[in-house]
Length: 528
Image (tube, rainbow, N blue to C red; front, side, top):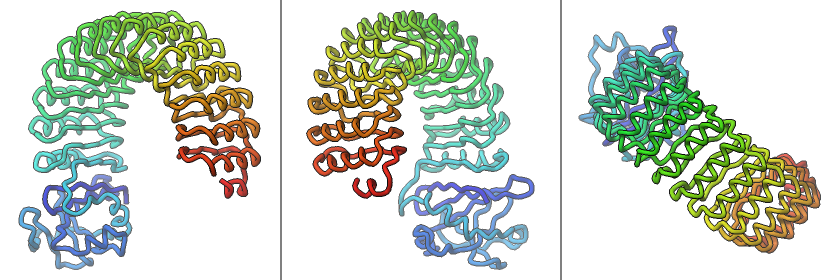
C-alpha cells in the first residue's frame, strides 16, 4: 500500500486516488464517494472506524466501494448522484482490496464539505506512473475546477510526458503544472513545448530536477516566442549549458509575459550569462532571475552588471554559489549605484571577501531600492563587516541582511551594534555561525536596548555562553520590537537559560525563542 491523494470535483462527488502495489507495479484504484449516498464519509473524515472497508475496482478505473467482500456492489454515478448496479460482466472482472488502513491515510487530504478543490498532488511511490493514469488525472482538470496539478517525483519519462502534453493542448483550466524530480529528457520537453504553443491557460511550469539539455531548452525557447500566458518557468537542476542559455536568451528578447525564470544548478557558465545579459537589456517583463550555481564567475557577474545598469524591471536576482570574487562584486556594486529596480540580491556562497564587501557598502550608501541582501558564506571578516556597518548607518531601505558564516567575530558584531543604534529600517539580521562569542553578544545587546525596528535576530552557532545570555536577557527586559531570537547550538547552559526565563517574565513581544542544542537541562526548560 502506497500513499494516497485526493481531489474534489464540483458538486458533491469526491474522488480518491489510491495506488496499490501489485506484481506489475501498475494498478491504481479510484474511489468515488457521493456524500448523500454514503453517510460513512463523516466517520471517514473524523478518523473514526473506516467504513466501507473494501474498495472494488476494475482495471481501467471504474470507481466503486462496498461494505464487505461480496458480490453485491454499488457504483455511484457522479453525474446523477444515485446508486447504479454494476453489470455482472464487469463485476466478474473486479478485484477486492482491504483498505482499512488506507482510509485513515487519506483522511487528511479530504476537503471540507461542498468545497471545490483546485489542487491535486500525485506522489505515488510506484516504480513508474502509468501513462493511462497520467492522462486520467490530467483529463480530469478539463471537466472540473482543478487548476494545479503536481506530478513531482513520479519517475515520469518522455513517453508519459508526451501523453500529458496531448492533454495540455485541449485543457482550458490548468494554470500550474509541476513535473519536478522526474526523468524527463529532451524528447519529453519537446512534446511539452508543442503543447505550450497551443495552451492558453498555463501560467506556471516546473521542470526542475530532470535531464533537460540543449535540445529541450531550444524547444522551450521556440514555445516561449509564441506562448503568451506562461509567467513562471523553473528549469533548476537540469543539464542546460551555454547553448541552451543562448536559445533561451533569444526567446526572452521576444517574450512579453514571463516574469520568473530559474536556471539554478545548471552549467551555463560566463558565456551563458553573457547571452542572457543581452536579453535582459531588451526584455521588459522578467522580474525574477535565478542563476545560482552556474559557474558564471567574475566575467559572468560583470556582463550581468552591465545589463542591470539598463534593465528597469528585474527586482530579484540570485547569483549564489557562482565563484564571484572581488572584481565581479565591484561590477555589481557599480550597477547598484545606477539601478533603481532591484530589491533583492542573493550573493551567498561566493568569494566576495572584505574588498567586495567594501565595494558593496559604497553602493549601499547610494542605492535606495534594495531591501534584501544575502551575503552568507563570503569570508568578509570583521573588516568587511565594518564597511557594511558604515553603510547601514546611512542606508534607509534595507530591511533584511544575511551575513551567516562570514567570520565576522566579536569585532564585526561590535561594528554592527553601532550601526543598529542608528539604523531605523533593518528588521531581519542573520549572524549565524560567526564566532561572535560573549563579547560580540554583549555589544549587540546594548544596541537592542536602543533599536526599535529589528524584529528577527539569528545568533545561532556563535559560541555564546552564560554571560552572553545574561546580556541578552537585560536587553529583552527593555526591548519591545524583537519577536524572533535564534540561539540554537550555543553554550548558554542552565545559568543562561535561567536569566533568559527571568527576562521572559517581563518581555511581552518575543514570540519565538530557539534554544535547541544549549544543554539547558529539564529544570531550566520548566523555568522557561
